[in-house]
Length: 375
Image (cartoon, rainbow, N blue to C red; front, side):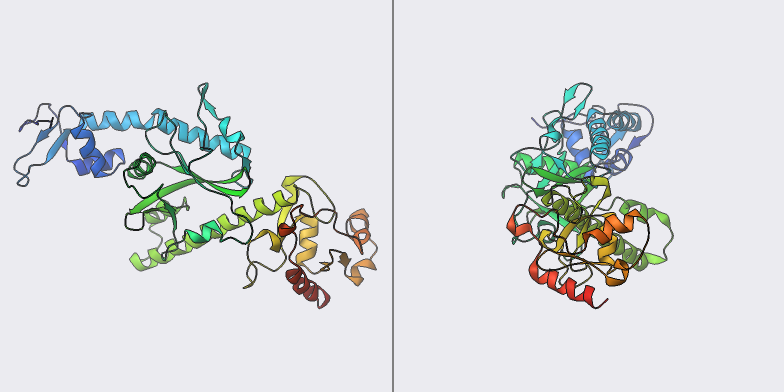
């Protein structure tokens, strides 16, 4: 039955429009209307002098009560705690995490899995809106998922679940967008292994394309507030630059996790197995047209060997044999030079991926080796 509303205030004090209430609480105006219709605001009246159909007016004190309850709500607590928990376990989002570990998160002794094993959009039963989204792992040779989801504006997209706009998963994601809730985006980098990116926000929904627009740049809102740019055009340039930087960082994280996992968290040259000391080295530089961020164009290397490779001090032949530049071989220095570089000359790589498709691309190695010889 349709709810009836009085035509005069039923509470003293200031009353807010649905737009003002939405701004105060931090939700979309349509969400306020839904809350009015479902009785969340009990003391609403209609100001019939504002338009033929009237306008809702809500007591300011009721709006403030809802805003206060939302700020300390279970939903908000879960999201803040989940991000802090992930930051500790993934080196502030630099490392990937196994999906089984994502089922261990708890708050107040209540278990809240951070992603679903089967579904791309995940809303735990205890929350009103989606908590995370997932892009599944794709084998070498398939299109990279983070490129598939880029729009003409440079922002990422995330597809609906199915083609029904009112499917429960899509409604859960829409509520996250309307409430401006932060989400976690899990990118698959290997079977069962996910690179988390957080926080991300949904900026808009493109219903014709059946997708949401996703912002992975946490500084975007701050850019709108800085006042350090002159005019809308300059602000748009800054925002586009921020988007490009955010996407580059995303690519770097996915590349690093994929390569280090393929090499079983070991340096290809010396077998060092300390993740904090490992990098994902590009065989063909990232800035080069052929420098795709795929596993076969990368090698896991400790920071010393990565720097030596990039500086042309160390080269790797297409047959996976290490070479050290002749002038470096002739130097006399401490144990790091002797054992870390000189003794690796004419030795095979100590670690290579078990899957042939993940091993260094021969053509890429040939190009890099020719560059090394010409250094």
